[in-house]
Image (cartoon, rainbow, N blue to C red; front, side, top):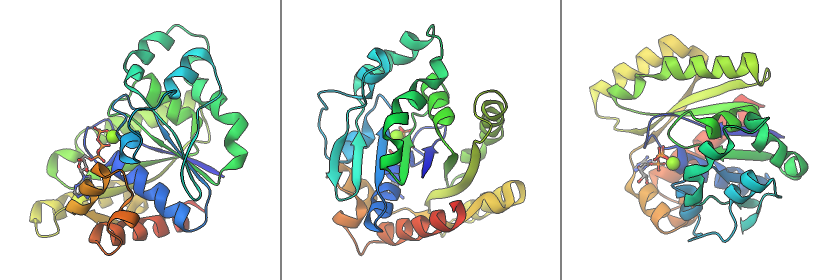
Length: 248
Ligand SMILES: Nc1ncnc2c1ncn2[C@@H]1O[C@H](COP(=O)(O)OP(=O)(O)OP(=O)(O)O)[C@@H](O)[C@H]1O
Ligand SMILES: [Mg+2]
């Protein structure tokens, strides 16, 4: 059983798209998967076809209530988010054990799943720290463009701090490049720099720019249901295989 946080402080790097399609990809291979949306934008929730959830992770965080779980498809469940989460960080900041709230909420249901995947917001606040504390491993999607690389050192520093202070078994599972344009030279330079710095942590699989990935999200479907023959489906299937071989 593994809990994975998909994290990057930068917006729009493909966290949510990757959460949906890694989750759906693992579920298709017979693994029991729980996706957890802790972003107030609720893009993961919407991207799985749930308009507005009646009860969300916010209610559980606030009132220490059982996590709401919705079944999406075979082997795939979701803990939805809602816009209320926007204020959650401020509300929990004075609580004792504020970094372990999500860990505690997941504890009674962990054994039911092979993989729990947490889609983090584009910031490193208390919610993201909660995700890191609750996780075994972190996956970092990086956009294939020059500025994507800025700040990664800082982010890795924060992961190290969490490991030293709050979760000594937290591991960086890997970094993968998304929204890559294979024809742009610039992208290649970034990949080379990344490989130099992070070495074996960089996944071989790269997710190409593919409009079907964006369309699938708008339709509330995974890429495997929306466009199974697309490059997006091929890339995410390959990424899932690489995750399975690298994380186990
Ligand atoms: N490989 C891709 N090809 C084309 N479009 C993509 C690809 N990956 C993601 N997108 C689109 O780019 C936008 C940002 O992606 P996504 O929502 O996954 O990023 P995010 O990191 O979760 O963003 P945020 O930081 O706001 O949570 C979305 O509209 C998504 O559909
Ligand atoms: Mg997102």
